[in-house]
Amino acid sequence: MKHQTLVDKNLEFVWHPFTQMGVYRQHDPIIIKKGKGSYLYDTKGRRYLDGYASLWVNVHGHGEKRLNKAVEKQLSSIAHSTLLGSSNIPSILLAEKLVDITPTSLRKVFYSDTGSAAVEIAIKMAYQYWKNIDPVKYKKKNKFITFKNGYHGDTIGAVSVGGIDTFHHIFHDLIFENIQVGCPSFYHSQYESDQELRESLLDQIEHLLQTRGDEIVGVVMEPLIQGATGLFVHPQGFLKGVEQLCRQYNVLLIVDEVATGFGRTGEWFACHHEDVEPDIMCLGKAITGGYMPLAATLTSQRIYDAFLSDQHGLKTFFHGHTYTGNQVVCALALENIQLMKERKLIPHIQKTSKVLDQHLRQLEGHPHVGHIRGRGLMYGVELVSDCEKHAPLPIRTVEHIIAECKNRGLMIRNLENVITFVPVLSMSKREIKKMTSIFKQVLTDVLGS
Ligand code: PLP
Image 1 (spheres, rainbow, N blue to C red):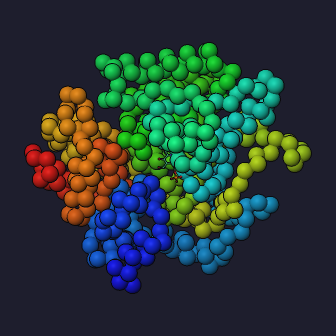
Image 2 (cartoon, rainbow, N blue to C red):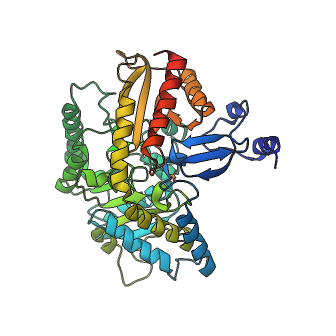
Image 3 (tube, rainbow, N blue to C red):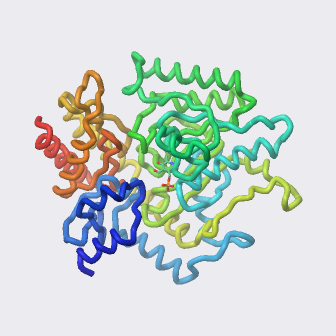
C-alpha cells in the first residue's frame, strides 16, 4: 500500500496513545514497515537507529531469528488455551525461569499482559494480603507510600500509586488516596548532597511508618531510576534504605521493574544492584525481548501462602485476564532469557553503558546541558535554557531537536526537556557511538556548541 494511503487511513482510523491528535495530524507521520537489528525502516524507505528500543522493550534487535522461530514452534503446537482451570507448558517453564533469575525472595508468578496490569495486580494482592491474614487487625490498611514523579502505568490503580500531577488532576475523582513522598532526584532537589537527600527522604518515610503505619499497605517504587517522568536516578543506597524500613515496620515492598528489568540498568534487575529482596516485583516491557505483550507479578512465599484456603471462594485472589499465561508469549519470553544468557548480554550492557556514559559526558559544560544521568542503557540528558537556575529548555526547541535527530536517522524521544537514550540492549559500541554523535551534531546545529 502507498505511503500516502496509509497516512490517510492512519488519520482517519487510529487514535494514538499519549498523543494530542490535533497536533499529530499537522505533521507527516513516520510509519514503520520493518525492523532489522538495531534499525527501524519506514514506508518511505528511510532507516532509523532505534535509540529508544521501541519504547524500552527491544533486547536482541528487530527480526531476531531465534525469537521468530520460538513463536513459530509454539504456534505449530497451540496458540492459546486458558490458564483458568488448566495449565500449559511454556507458562510453567517460564515461571520456574523467572523465579530463578529474580531475587530469591520471589517464589510465585502471576501473569498478565501489560506493565500497568502487573502493577494493578500487585496493588490488589498487597491490599488483600493484609485482609487475608487478619481483617480486624489490619482493617485500616488501604494506602501505599508512593513517590512524586513515579510512573506505574495508566490503569486507575496504577495512576493512583503514580505521582504525575496532570494525571492526578484529570482523574482526581476516580483514583484512590495514597501518601506521597518527594522525588528522590538530587538534581531537582534543594539538598547539598546525594546522601543528604537520601537520609531526608528515608526519615520522612520512617516518620510516616511510625505515625501512620496502621494505614500503610506497603511502599510502591521504581527501583534505582524513575523512568517515564524523566529518568531520575535515585541516590546510592536509597532502595536498600527503603527495604530496611519496610522490614523494620512490617509493610510490603513492591518494586516496579517494568522498565528497569531484564538488564536495562546493567544487572538482570535493578534490585540486584543493592541486593534487595522485595515482597512483590512487577515485570513487563523487555520480558519477551520486545516482541509481544506479556507481564508478570512475582511474589514471596509469605504472600502466596496468605491466599491459601481449602474453600474455593475464601481468600481467593479474584483477578485474571483472558490471555493470562498465553503459550506463545511465554515461549517467546523463555527464548529471550535463554538468548540473554547465551549471548552474555548483561556483561555486554555493562561495557556499552560505559561507552554511552563517556560519549554523553563529553557534553558536560555545554551551556544548554543541565544534567546527564543514568545507569546501564537508560540515560537522560536534561536540556536547559539556564544551567544555574535549571530552567528547562522550551519544549518547542526540544521537539525540534528530536525531529532533527529523526531526519538524520536516529529515533529517540524526549520526556519534557529530557532527551532519553534507552537503546536496543544488544546495540554494538559502534552503534552507541553513532547514536550519540548524531545527537551531539544536532545539538550543535540547533543550539550552537
Ligand atoms: N511501570 C513502569 C515503571 C513503566 O515505565 C511503565 C511504562 O512505561 C509501566 C509500568 C506501564 O507499562 P505498560 O505501558 O506496559 O502498561
